[in-house]
Amino acid sequence: MSATPKPPLNATLAAFGARVRARRVELGWSQEDAAQEIGVHWTYLGQVERGQRSARIENILKLSAGLQTTPGQLLDGLDVED
Image (cartoon, rainbow, N blue to C red; front, side, top):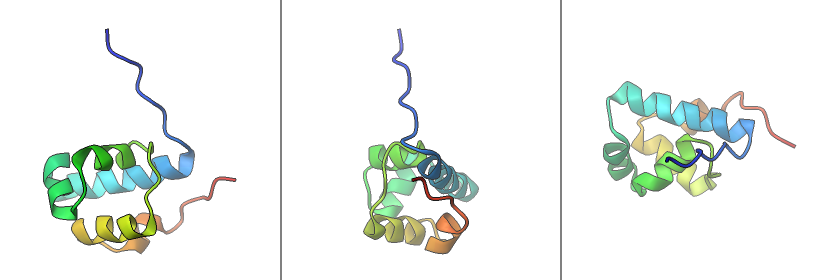
């Protein structure tokens, strides 16, 4: 019996994670490949993609550089949760 997946922490993190995942898929990378390129553990990347972890600014910069995009592409237009 599988455990019920944890929900995203909030809608903002879910949307950010979806952008990270979309860019990774666009590059044709697995989570493991992307994590190695970015310089983070693949479980961390998975948590970010599922909106279960809030990335610090340093990691947002690492994510964007590793995914060959800009922080703005990952962040612009996201609603801020209260």
